[in-house]
Image (cartoon, rainbow, N blue to C red):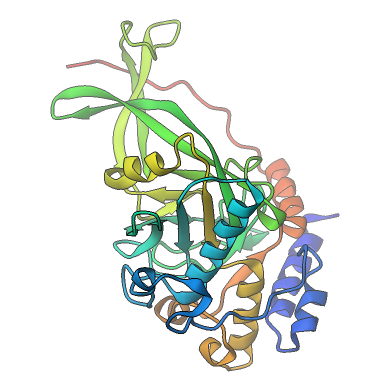
Length: 342
């Protein structure tokens, strides 16, 4: 299929998904979903859904609080995985990607056994703007676009189970006059249904920090040196509360504590919104209806900024991305210039 045809198909699908209609119509319009949309989940009443009283105190739409629907789904998903024997961890994670990024605390680590609730900042997928294809990029503060397409660099909502933690070398940087290696840990997520390609996409959680390479530095005694004795050197960039390539990222200062909760003990991660939520909210907005009145949830501040959200299914977006890459192959990597240690 030609790329231009794919563009029209994607645009038509996204527009059509936002049109008003019945819940059954939504299921018919979204053949990529593995099951029809669930009924909207209303805010929890005190004592409802078996949520302990201490945890109910954290429900709300303020900074550092967790919205009712996000908690209900994250907790329900975790309890189901415990019953299935997939996890045996009293702690679980949730992420509300409809809330503002930056200093906004929207990633949650909940440990019911010791009654702890932690809320920290987190980044969302940056997306991409591909000339001649589509603009599915996200601003730093609020996410508008979501997808499970490989190479889309977008967040995908739904349930995940954590897997192994891998630590890798990212380069050297200067810290207070000394050269330090950045060793970044990555917590792999395993998905199911719409999120099933999480490992294929290398989706997981990690500190939002990277070394932007500038040059190759002679450092033959380093265990990370290449065969000629050079290591990459550059500037340390902390983007923990900004945009990622689709992963869940955290500020470096809190990442170790989050990773420790899942190390050698798998648990669950629930990311809101799912594809059904995105389409339902878009339909409500298109119909001129406030999502809350329709029993739907989206952070009000971000919804005002983005207008309406979009979900880009992999079945439509991935072929377009492949076609774009063929027409615009990445430049051949060039060796870094050599720099000298002062």
